[in-house]
Length: 499
Figure 1 (cartoon, rainbow, N blue to C red):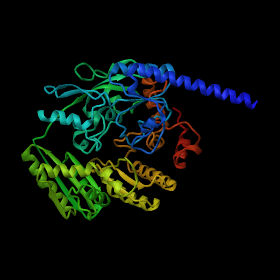
Figure 2 (figure 1 turned 90 degrees about the horizontal axis):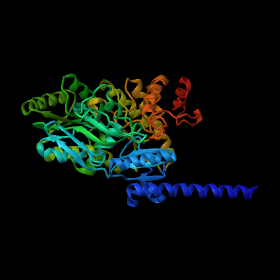
Figure 3 (figure 1 turned 120 degrees about the vertical axis):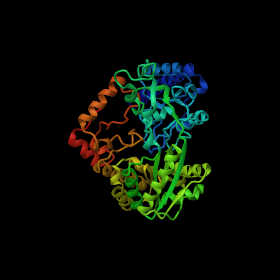
Figure 4 (figure 1 turned 135 degrees about the vertical axis):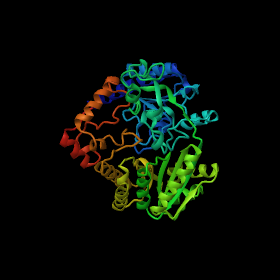
């Protein structure tokens, strides 16, 4: 009997190898041998993004055209394999991780700017175009692409579309969804559609807005038409230095309450300032309790008035000093420090776990006090750098993933912070998406009925659930397997949600 079982196991293994080899061969026929990754050691590069989870795909393909994407999707259907779209892999919620294996379609070689229409303030690009490259390409003509995630030097437009990425300037300019006019979309069937009319306007259902932020579960964008924004006449940057996080938080509400909407309004606590200054020497005081980075733009005369108003508000709320960047180089240095903050935290710990909860601005002081309490409870430092103007928190829990107790405490701390955000009238994600990381936590925010409606919409596009499976929605599994028992209790109370 043991010999028979051994023979059967060998036969199954050999059949599996044969099917895998056939898959790889057919993928190579579509895109070429140099555009398919299948060796286990090379696949390790694609098993993770900037979150904590890791899963190995069966194959990685790097197409260059829409037709190649179509053929890959149809092949995946024939093999009954999941498809996971991926850009640069900078996502922070596990959206590009192949949790069920399958084929990862990487769009980084689809990196061409296809057309620019300055008269109508639009550009059409492939999804692998780097976010910052589009602005660099258009700024000579007086335009820029407004959404600016901190990873904009490496993240792709397609990835931004999938996650509805934000960034420091979304306070004034809006997130990705406000700047997408049309998508060429390869559906899970392999069909190709456009989400808007030829003029870029919506006719009927806002299909473009529906797809943006769907995290690769509705289809793969192979061309993206974006809105270009005229460069402002003047831009000024202020750095307001405070003794405490509370003073800085209250100042945020005061600025917005005065009717002033800065282009960006960012906060960093003392721990972040220390790391940033050690790494970049950008002018952040390492002895500050917190700082506000305020960017004001618009017509020159109006900006000058706003600089005076914001400076006065900051001083009236406890700022010991308000510095004004006096040159483009100083402005660039301050922004380089802010956008390089996460990298600078590597000086303080081997790993960080960044959260993405949102609270009303008036709740910032008590929320940050709660984050400090969580830091004490889990016995791990937390560095805060975030979009204060729209209440989008980014507490970074610093830990060492080589220590299993660190990981457990880190996850517990992140969950407690998200729970508190929801209790204060906020949400579990402002711009990083739900992905794997928050698919259980989303039950804090939505009822089973809410999630069922969302799932029905997804199934209109993705009925077999082969496109980016097991993302966004709570998985169907026993309560004992849910990462945190309090999440399990919530799911059990409402009926474990099946997708």
